[in-house]
Amino acid sequence: MSKSASVRSAGGEVPPSEFPDAQVVGPESRQSEDPTPAPEIPQRFPLGSESWAFAARRRHGVQSELIHVVIEFDGHLDQKLLRRAARLLLDAEPVLGCLLHTENDAPYWERLDFAQEPDIVRIVSTQQEYDTVLYASVDTSTGPPVLVALWPREQGDRLLFKTTHDAGDMGAVHTSVARLAEIYTKLSIDPRYQPIPNLGRRDYGLVTELIPRRAYPRIAWNLVRDISGVLVFPSAHHVPVPGGPDKPWCYVTRAINPERGRRLSAYAKERGATLNDLLLAATYRAFAAVGDWNGRTSLRIPVTIDLRRWYLRPEDKVGLCTLSGLEFPFLGRTLGADLAETLGRVNKLMTNRKKHWIGMTTALVVPWTTRRAGYRRVDRRFEMHSHRPRSERGRVGFSNMGRFEPEGISFGAQTPASAYGLVMPRAAPAMLMGFTGYRGGLTLSFGTPEHNRPTVDKLLDAILTELPD
Image (tube, rainbow, N blue to C red; front, top):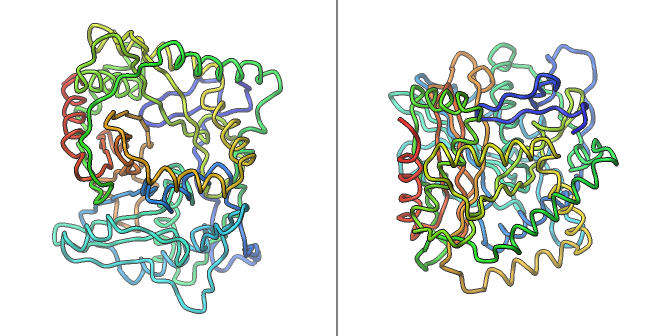
């Protein structure tokens, strides 16, 4: 890996000391009295080919492709100020103020006509109203790809932020929520405040162009290794899932309190591993247990990688987009006798991948293959997929969705009591376990069709059972 790349992973990862730590946030904003003119916002932004599948899957109902963040406060937010901040967010992060056009082979975002102010904030007063917004779809052909709900409660407000994956991945959502909090805070000081639009670059080239030519043979070998891992053990382990409709969706979560979360981090560190490694190891063991693994099938859990944290430099200007890759640290038929052995195996695999261009294989291959196919063909593929009978062989994926920092998501004087993300729902038999952190605590989540709730309940309970107290 080049020394120009930064290395950081959420959930307790510690970057090697020779790499700078590059937390990706929105661009610095300006006060309204700053005489520097704000850059003009373009009317159109291309939808990167890395996001075509997200748009097509959501369009045909194969997946919801929605990402949520939930923030709870001990106090109360100013509703008028929140509405104003949400409106300015559509300019601060311009893609959020667009409609998505997918009529041809070059999908694009187009800025809304703001003659009529879009209302992206919902004030709810009951659990039922909150759930309605939580599970609502977002139609990017008629409105912005973002929605905010505020539930003013006696014990403290709850804020829900939701957006679509074709607008950006979880890394982009972190940026969006932090930007909303920043705008709210600055408006509370100066009502005339206007943020500078973030016109940073929005494609995989941000990371792939940093890769030196000497790395390509190794990346090609990584691709061969991953394909070979599937061919050598063609029979993959699965958990049985019941048949049923894709809707309604439900979220199933488990919370790990800060005290236990810190103990888990210490447990992993004592063994030379990371919290991410530990949770992946526990997920592998839960996957094996719930599916009654017989030792003959291959254990496979793909893992998402936030490429921003591994490759971007502090000077890189990034707009909202998808900059995620996939890694395939498959255990094959070697699980380990206990959690410590599984953790050692996972740590060895992940350490090797971190040294050899982690996540970069999919970052290079996926955009190239989708561009060659064209958006219409990608769209037709998922349209056909939506009509196919679903398998009952459930597979599990794993996503570290990052850690929220109190100072980054405080709204004025209101510092969150809790904050967590909800992983993007997947249509069964696919299942994705995601986790986020806040102040030492962890939240684990699945998004799945309601009929599959018992399966993910078993998986989450098994994960917590595998983890040390």
